[in-house]
Length: 443
Image 1 (tube, helix red, strand yellow):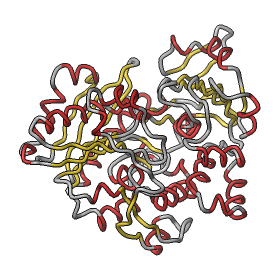
Image 2: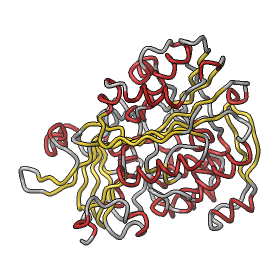
Image 3: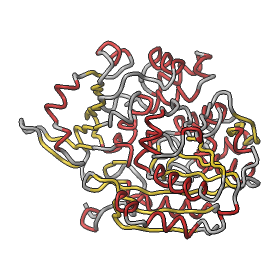
Image 4: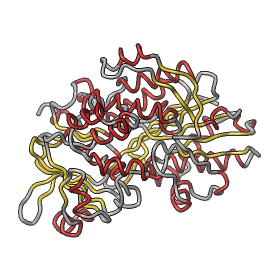
């Protein structure tokens, strides 16, 4: 197998597949794969269906299975609900159902080591001072010839830039690391993390990978995908074991997935695809990825026709309904007072991430939750039909728009694919790589 980096400027994902570009890249990288007898592939769940990981996994499956290799596929669910058969077919194509395994983050894991408390305290600036057990799905230790971790690198609210070892310790990890890493990110502050490498959480994952995964036959396949003219484009593919492949993907994603506005937006309207976003646990990406572009006292309107619940399981759903998205200070007090939150820090972190802390308002327009339910967790409510008629998402592309009445707003049609901010919200070293042109950089 060869370590490879591929860059494709604006190559549509459809064209990458149809032209054979993706197939040729995988064939070039995976020389010698014919000798593998058992392979485990870790792919994302349906909420990352635009990552192109589904197409990559399908190509890998047919290449390996065609050589007599047994291929098992473990979607890296993290805390998300298991994929349905229909979702597996939509994302992964004609791979037989019997190849898929289901990750259970509460039960189906084994410990591989512990990140020391002193290290955690150092990298987190003292916001978290406890040791963190590192757990992985037991399949990773089942003697596979190769483990292939496939996923997308993009800005992320917990770790800064998604994927790499996060796919292992969260996507196929256990409750201890999931709770602790989410807490570190939330307590440290997501606006200090998003769009950056070497965040406190990333450094914790790096430590765990360096100390506990070295003996695993683990290879990463990392994509960078952009949104252009309403279409997903495969900008790069980075294959290898070394962290520098991840760093190359981070650099490309910072250029392709972070978009700067030349002024703060008083109103942002975000569209959440109904097939992908069925809970606020996932649909709150609209809040995470747009908050740094919103003006003080601004409003975010979340058009979420598929949202039917708050949590991805009943236990988390109940906690969201009980405590709500009521601000960092309130939630930190509740963590101190309530054992159920201290024992479920991922839920507490999610509630902090989804809170505006009074700086802006969030108006949710769900397809399947009532006004009482939405207002009960601290959001404003507006009828979906009314807001769709006013803002016309079907006819809009990401950018500035006005309603028929002259109201200006910024529209985002795929918040999960990027990060939006206005100048002054991120450090210069990230910003310099992300402006689209020199003129905008000088504003």
